[in-house]
Amino acid sequence: MSYRKVNYEEVEQVSSAMHFLSDPLETERVGVTVARCDPGWNSKPHDHTDNDHEEVYVLIEGEATVVVDDDPVAMETGDALWIPPASTRQIRNGDEESAFVLVSAPSIGDDEDGDGEWLLSGFAG
Picture (cartoon, rainbow, N blue to C red):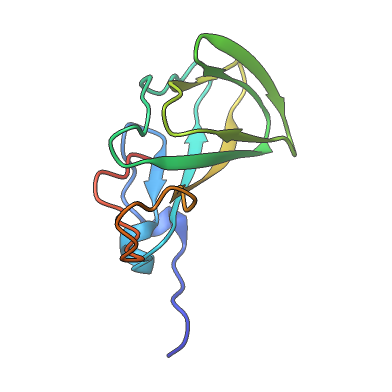
């Protein structure tokens, strides 16, 4: 079979919002997470310095704020936000439910060892 399919609602929810899809999809070079955020929900502030993952947050439903390095970025449905690996990021949801698709992948411009491996260990979504 040349594809894999999963419904995010069938994937165990983590931190009361996150559905990590990389494992069930058996991805090798990209992390994908669906975050269904209840009103008032906040993610833990984190960065991806250790695994050198850049991320794109796409808000597909509602409104929310993503704090990047202490800078609040207001997001509305349809907005996409790129975040570099070393930046601290946190989702802060407002009074209504919101939904994000989070995409993560290693930076490809700085591969020092040249082996072409893209590791997803430690992917936090």
